[in-house]
Length: 234
Image (tube, rainbow, N blue to C red; front, side, top):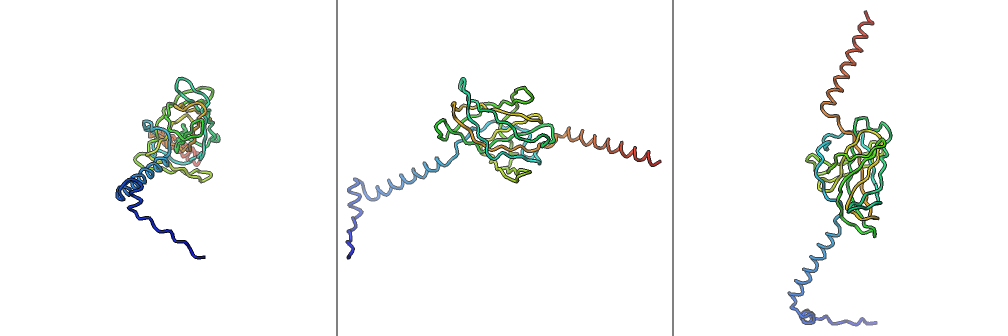
């Protein structure tokens, strides 16, 4: 069977049918294409939390191991009052004694939020409430201080999973006394919305005064032990 060849329509005819010149049509197509690309790029951007003022300590250079990660944490907005949507409690899962220092630092990042219909939305963090040993309090909180680093990657000391937080993204950081605790987050999200994030809990380095006291204490213990051994050898 012989193929039927359809004659090509001259571009001038196409332009005339469209009511524009060929050059004008090309310019219109390019404009639409740029608009679609910008729209697609905007849709690809994560909708997350607004950036809080920086919590100065502990910063990225004041953290050490061990590190414990929660690679996925989802919280629902379960109460809403006076424009404030509060999440359900998140229960800390660190085993007792996992962090040896006096404080536990929690850093949340890589936020995503969804309205009650599952649509991605942006949101603001308004506060944090911690319940520990039967009492509830608001710790000092803010954005994690990256100490000039463009990003920080944390590796779990047990599972070796990793989480990377970028300095340009929203984060939430706060510290509590060492021990089991739970926390809720105040937002401007509606009832039935949800938040997804990743959490890391690294070991903060001792403060200079604490380090000095610890070093002095070790020196005193060592000196006392040396004196006892010397006394016994006489």
